[in-house]
Length: 91
Image (cartoon, rainbow, N blue to C red):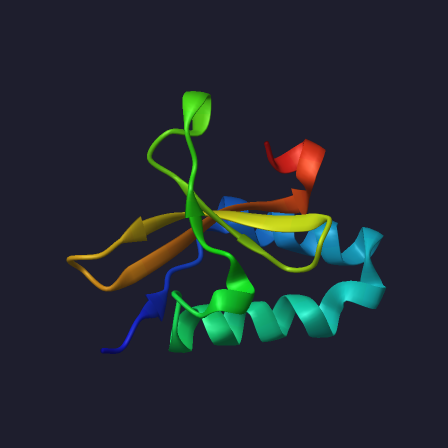
């Protein structure tokens, strides 16, 4: 089963801002995206569904403190990143 990442212009701006503030996390960030596309259910991503005001979105971990929130469209095999940042800024 192949998944595809669909990047919006808004997400790309957020990602650039995140990487500018955290250049040391670029390798981890790119590895997370590669793994997400290859197997979004890989245990190291810690994929989980969100609730409350972020209901309908999912989250994966870049490391212990940084996350990527995303729309996870199972029937279309698409993953649409929504936001990236540390725990407090994403949630």
